Each structure stands twice: as C-alpha cells, then as structure tokens.
Amino acid sequence: MTAVLYRPKKIRWVAVPLAVGLMLFFTVISFGLTGSAGFQNSNASFQRGDQLAMIGLGVLLGLGVLAFCRPRVTADDEGVHVRNVIGGYDLPWTVVRAVRFDRNSAWAHLELENDEQVPVHALQAVDKDYAVDGVRSLRALHSASHRA
Image (cartoon, one colour):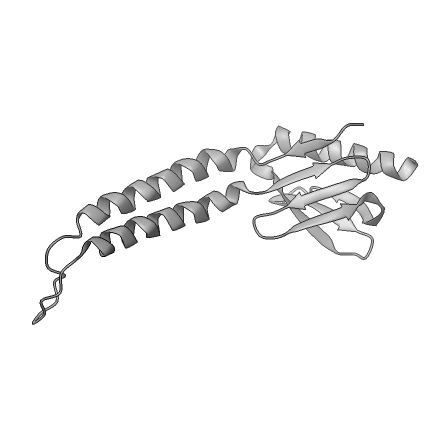
C-alpha cells in the first residue's frame, strides 16, 4: 500500500479568514493611534512605533490562529508520523495497538501498546467522511503491517 497524508479541512475554512481578519483589524486600529495618548497631565502621544507594534500584534495573533492548520498525519507500511498543533510523534506500527475514533471524540487516537493514547488532530470529527476515510486508511496500513 502507498503512503497516505491527511490534514484537517474545515478548520482551514475558519482559521484562514479569521487570521486575515485579525491582521486587517489590528492594521486599521493602528491608523487610529494618532495624537494624544489620553493621559491627564501628560504630553504623551502615539508614535509611529506604536502603530507598527499594533500591526505586529495583529500578525502574531494571525499566525497563532494559523497554527490550528498545522496538524497532519502521514503513514506508510513502516509507521505513522503525527504532527499536532503542538508537538508530534514518529511511531512504527509495532507500537500501535489500534487506530481509534470513538463516537464522542473530537479527533482520532492511536492506542499504543503501553496503554497510552496519541491524539491525531488531523482527523477531526467535523470533517466527517474525510476523517472516516483517513481512519480507515490508517487501520488498513496498521493491519497490513501486523500481518507481514
């Protein structure tokens, strides 16, 4: 069997426009930072650096939202590589006991031989049939590796 690659789909429909919106919002806000800073008995005023900092904050928040597009799972006959929002795992099929996607679970899990579970954020319940196909592909690779 060939290698498979799965990434979450619907989260992109939300994260990309939200990230762009945040960056635009903070950029527009930065243009409003002119004149007096509004403190009593002070000559403080907004400077160009304050505007740039506000734009930078929008970019950082936008990148933070885009981090939710980072998850992916790749698998082949040898093993599975899971990359989640934070962290990742490189596992041979010999340590994986089962590929699970429980009914009320937000995403799939790999159940390991030592009774630990590894979340697979790339296969999310909101992606419905796409996630089910991904789980079936992982299960097929898992069972093929255990038969060999």
